[in-house]
View (cartoon, rainbow, N blue to C red):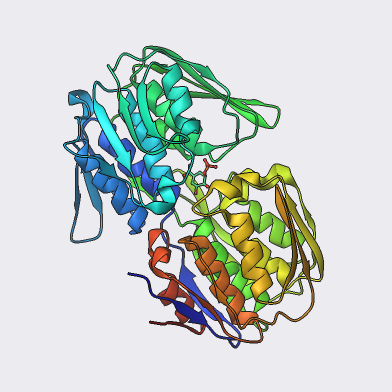
Length: 441
Ligand code: S3P
């Protein structure tokens, strides 16, 4: 059901919150646990709708996932018995990461499976995953433009490939590596730019030998199949992409001083922190520790006088989901912030370049759009007062509400329901630091 929300100009934000479980790591914990032999126990799993879609999909493929009374998730993997053919089409909801990784994993078994999703997911390109799977020998049928619904049919004995993805994409890298797990011989992925490396790290935790070799700005990843994953324990660290909303809210709301605990500091994910610091944002990380194979820290963020910068396009993969909220920060920064080399944003849950440009313009911010980016002219007081169209995109919805906290007039959004895909605790956590937001009918 569609219901809106509204954010009001707020007094200074303060207090301490804990970042929710990382979405990328949560998907992988469920998928790898379902492929593995034996039991995997996951703590700190994100309870987002996208993750429940992945749990539903892996259950349909034969795994058993249960939640314990103390909030852990226990996965009984398919292991040597293998994934089984689902009885009906698998609906992955809004989860792009889920469907792309699962198609890769499922393709290596002797099964036929149809995948679909919600309206947003059905509009997103799947060729980036189907193309390499076809090269490995998978038969596919897909809707126009290689979109969902799509069916993969595999005899299970795939050929290994040496593949260079055309875009920096952790989803594509992961889909190919997962198909490679059950494929005899060397599956190689050559990344020209490093994307998030959670698949490589977590496959190792499940006992796989994953070789990585840096090359220029990217890396070469090699696995040699067949590889049997063994169930393990996964502790999911906090999501820097969700922490981003509280971080920007504190930076732009005068007088704010907050702490966000448990934020994953993996360098393939910290591009926004680096960028906001270059813009003059006071963000201090302390209490560095290891959790679930990743470094986590607590972030102390204070209201800061921001200045516009030219964001290096090479940094895009490490902050790809954070551009909408960065554009909100840029609206409050003195001078121009230039973001380019981000054409991938056009094929996310919505066309995030045009949705962000519309969000800002409707609220009185001067912004120009180009094919591969945008330029925000910040510095004047941000008027606010508009209703923002979210295009069923959780990150557009949360970015608009963050803007409303520091604008002159309240900002509303047409639909808040999608926020639950990645950050169901968003309203509670923002209220805990003093942000004024409410649901509207
Ligand atoms: C993700 C990779 C990114 C990101 C998405 C999560 C992942 O997508 O936008 O939210 O978990 O692998 P791309 O692989 O398309 O860059």
